[in-house]
Amino acid sequence: MADLPKDADNRRDDDAGASFVLQSKGQWWHAGFHLTTAIVGPTILTLPYAFRGLGWGLGFLCLTVMGVVTFYSYLLMSKVLDHCERSGRRHIRFRELAADVFGSGWTFYFVIFIQTAINTGVGVGAILLAAQCIEIVYSNLWPHGSLKLYHFIAMVTVIMILLSQLPTFHSLRHINLCSLLLSLAYSFLVVGACIHAGTSPNAPSRDYSLEPRKSARVFSAFTSISIIAAIFGNGILPEIQATLAPPATGKMVKGLMMCYGVICVTFYSVAVCGYWVFGNKSNSNLLKSLLPDEGPSLAPTWLLGLAVICVLLQLFAIGLVYSQVAYEIMEKKSADVKQGMFSKRNVIPRLILRSIYMILCGVVAAMLPFFGDINGVVGALGFIPLDFVLPMLLYNMTHKPPKSSCTYWINISIIIVFTGAGIMGAFSSVRKLVLDANQFKLFSSEVVD
Image (cartoon, rainbow, N blue to C red; front, top):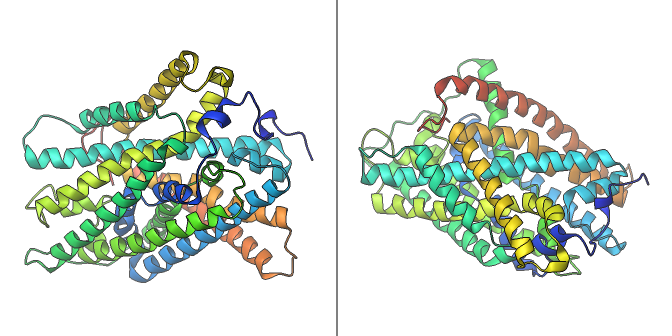
């Protein structure tokens, strides 16, 4: 095997990123909480928006295929990690796993680059959507108020800075249990709001037609596929499995079952109800569709207010989960494991570095409020390679299924199909991002779909 980066070894006594941030003390249900928070977030409110680029039939098909493929992919990834652990090489970082199996240093840095893009994109998106939630409440209570979107982004960033000081991934387990319950709560609330809106005398007119031009329809479809990929993606499964108390073998499967039980309940109900009511007028945030800028609310204000609050609270948990890889990378070099997690030597660098990271995410969110477009780009360039391509490749290389077996060819087929979808999705998402760039100025108070 080729020489790997020094970081590719198992836990070391001087590795503060592993000893502090990726502390291994969790049970399988804790991994289920983390996984659910990483996947089932307010981005599901974008599903009706994704359906408008696909229509009913293709929308259902893509949603189902993505669900089946990602469950299969995460199951294979967990099996690869279990295989390495049984061989005496427990990997706690995605980049270490990829470098070990491929026997090449370039995969180590490739995964770091993709994970950083995902984590930053999700961090920016979480801050932006949380700020938009506060703005929705504010604009309904004070329609002529002077505060703008970037003011709320600053408020959310300050809260995230404070919460980011929780030192370990494992310390988020109770927050992520609350996150799971919040995702169920706002999903049911939004579904109820959509049913109310769709059956009321003021129900919006429904149009499910796609783009009139064939080329635009193709681009919209691939952008929607990228968005759905981003919604199902997490890109941090090895780091989540690292929080399990050893031996971790087999525990992640139970966590996956918990997570996908919540997915089945929430994803389909929100996608169907939202698209049924708003059709091709669906906003990238379903709450904005239910609370239009002009005209009355399409559902009881108290119901939508509760949903907004649930979304807002869960976004803090999501921002924290996806920040853990960045914190682990930073603290691997900045912290001194010999002086203890809460020593002055380690607390001060943690405070400074994590605060700077959150401030940068907040600044980008304020400057570039492209929520739907960010989802598409992150899905195509980040989640598709890590969640739809690498797990199948890693499994084929570690378990070596016979080339005549169904498993081998299913994995190869998924790799080929989703590599193509990722390339097309990246092109169409970046194209839409460029087109939408003409709709706003820096620090705009409107989130661009």
